[in-house]
Length: 595
Image 1: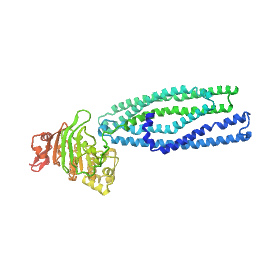
Image 2: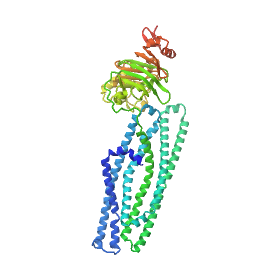
Image 3: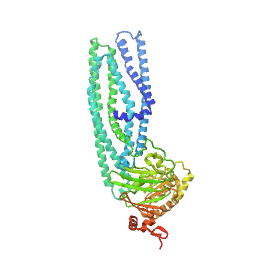
């Protein structure tokens, strides 16, 4: 609990005024609650028992004053309770919303290497359901724990002031209850932690299964996926039932403790009143406090369930928040400014934790030059592409833009200089125009339509019901691979950055789609540095120079025609694929070459 509150401290500072006001109202609520039994006890002890008058008032006047005071006290208690609960609960909700945004933002700061090792469903559960549990915890702490703890402390203090010995008698059942609650809370916390982990596994399995539904249906994997989900759901159920069993202990324990204390106070108090050692008024105050004392204690006992679940969820959330992003701005980082586009990869080595994917690579790309990185699958081409916009940092060596180490530049300004067209183009939920404009939100509609025209998006958009305003499903469902790639190219045209990276943009397309994508690529402006990652060699026709990678090392480099006429790795790759040949018209696809 303490660790949870400590991690919430930065979020509490943002709402310190509301928390201060709510705290003052909670104190006022306690004071009003402490006054509730006094009008009745004084009336009974001084007037109704015949012991004498109350403050010199006649019996009728004393009754009227007591009734009026009681109404005022309970009315004030209701008003204060409403505003304190509303204010503190609202503050808890706002803090939880801040936590959710911070967790999501912090996940965005993590490197691609981090996300590659995580399950999307589990991360989603931490942002959603785990924060929901934290929200319940915050609301309960602020609206239940703080006021009730103060009320118990206040009642105990008044009872000790009135009669210390009798107060100790009234608290006889409290230590037993405290021990049971403490032990049960520890067990419940572990059970809740296991239950949250099991829930995260269920969420991860569901997210994975739903994201690959075409594969599931095509390969008849429904029974296998159902058995897996059933197994995980059963584990989650068992964990949840264990937490429920532990939770069920609290109410009976508190009820028995309350009844025991009431019986002891009534018996001992009555004996002392008859012996003349205690006034009836004090006995009534004690009975009122004891009957009221265990209500907040019961609330606090029930709160331990929410606390255990919320603490377990908070630990999972805190695991994310305390992660230090592998890629982050240096303390003295400076803005990049508008770059010319020179890229220098200087003796770079990168590993995902096993053998190096890129090893001692040195490569230089001049401003405005188009370089194609080619090689077999696993040669390290996409890793090099990810290092340029600093999606990852190398373990050794440097990546420089315009002669500046990118680790000395502000990350946001570096990525603002780079446009990416990936092999698997991802579209966001929204219209085609929204997806083109997302890379440059301040672009005019005319600029977006021009980019769509240059990328041949309008070729298929004009056949859609609403043209560029046609909504696309999540991840671009409803569009072909080639259509999604053209949207990505339009996005790159609109961004108009000095560096463009094409990561195998045609590798998964059919011949017709590849032809359209190639036409769209040919329309890209030539006044920028372009890095083409190619597995299918037919995509490197527009390259000024080719660099061949094998096992993360540079093994050959030069103009494509020169390399193709030789007998090196590039010529062997071309011979294997049979995609390119050279004649007097330059480097052409086999189908376009003429003798």
